[in-house]
Length: 280
Image (cartoon, rainbow, N blue to C red; front, side, top):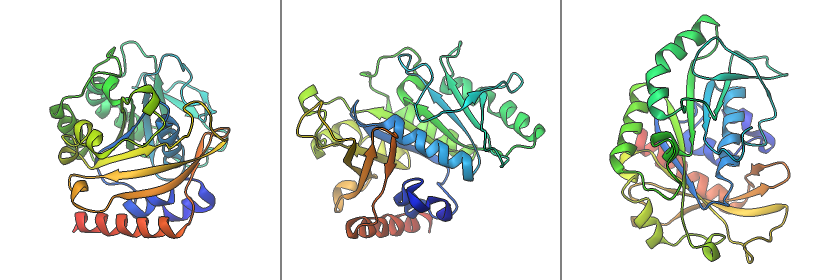
């Protein structure tokens, strides 16, 4: 995917991490506080992936936002009676489809997706569309437990179950998770002890986690272009220097960019070496 990340069309660091063929099968967590723009991050990934890589499925559970991430400015259409409604793109010149689910009845839970995935894939083949390669659950908690509030905890066994399902079906699954810091700390980076208590039990059971970190002087005051940090955690994260990439979030465009700074070059190299060692 390297050529498609030019001009900050996505996060180049992710390309450095996963290589030109895109992400591997498995579950990756995307964690952050409630104001850390996790939905914008995964919707950006969704847009770029479905434009250049393969078909994807986005399951969104925020009822206060019935049309989903505001950056998904596409019309809806019907695609037989399959799992989801395809998003009709005006510039659709590929065989990739973007499928977006929100407020369905019954809820588009992880269980429903797993049950209907074979039929969904058959429908894609019938219509000569590329196979689905990415599934996003925003949030993962609500995909696993429809109706649960975001403060509930996911049992590690469920993380392992989703990861194994992704491996068995050759899917990259991206699941968002809320980190519940006190309100006054919601705009500050979570400490290592907090991450250890909230994420450490999950990391050996999946591909790892990205954590979006804010560092605002004031909770509700920020510039339109807001600096953030994207931190990567795996099961060995406490035994090595932290991997933190500098990113910028444009609140108006709801889009992340990844500067080609010296720090980011070093961090990308570390991520690429890590990915290559895991693939060896």
